[in-house]
Length: 285
Image (cartoon, rainbow, N blue to C red; front, side):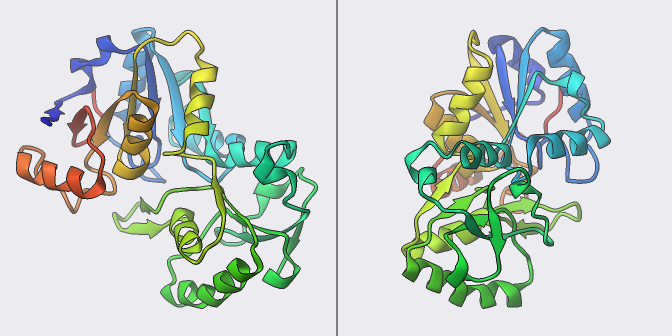
């Protein structure tokens, strides 16, 4: 299948009503906005389009929105924002779905630098060991290879006990401000599944988070998803039956330096098992 390479989103924007846009790797690098990204949102707003920021951030919605605002993505530039972390919090709070109804109150948290804000306001108790836990809340990870290696016995013990895991960020990696790839909770969750553990995911590419986006825009017309992860953004869009724009300058940048090489494109898409509708090196108008 031939994938159309765009010079800018303006080439196809008129064909869509709803835009579901990833943040990290597409709008910004975690510290500063990517060139032209704010302008794209302004142009879409000017054209009367509906914009939903869809992020696999394991943070709650207010935390994510405040961070985006600090980088210039104020809430007047989009209509809705959905984060996997917020969806996890809501599922834990409701405790109505089968996976969540019997989790228990004692959770072993995997976090970014001890950030346990995801359980604030929930009737949960954080514990320090697998033996005391009812389930694992996987909200963060580390890039320290020694620490990751040391986690393996813990994951093995947890899987042997049959502890369920809730993954608040399904991403395998994200692109750090210095251009390197940082390991994300999805990598740990995938390993836990290999060990036989049960995992529930709330973010991309899984269906519940797309249902949430569509519920927020009930009268939406044709939809375009934009992201830099073939597995999560493009795979999620394909699963939801919507068109997609792959941003090659994100986590796949080192694998694909030339968007004009159809063979390289085909090889990458075939390896990842996902093909987008369009591709572009960056999000620009």
